[in-house]
Image 1 (cartoon, rainbow, N blue to C red):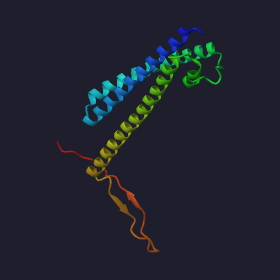
Image 2: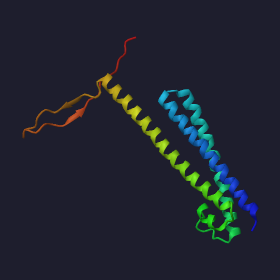
Image 3: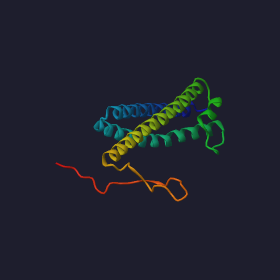
Image 4: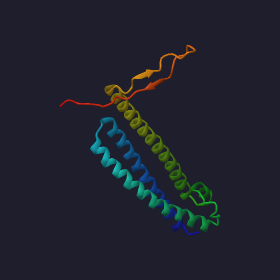
Length: 170
């Protein structure tokens, strides 16, 4: 068994986990910027996040190659694509623990990123809804006008009316 192949996989996994941890930090920074309405810092943070996401995509190739090399060395099939968890029972100690821990950390980080991204998205959508409602109130666009009552005594449909024009005195 060529231990250097397993060591290379562990190093690639460690790098991947490190990148995801940095991504978690960027997402937390984004949340802070959103709450503080610091749009300049938000823009910088978003750019950093985008660059890191591209770096992670490139690192995935390295990680998959390491998993495939290790699987081949261990005599495991490459179809379907082996997972880190598939390799853990077959690699010697202490690499089994290192791969298992890295796999668990990576999964937790991914879940954290998904949750925080969703929370940030919801915050932005709620803020946009509030802005739209405020504009509608200011312009009178949220007024409902009804068709009155129908012949059978039922109330007619209510329709949202929009103002003809919004004017601003300077």
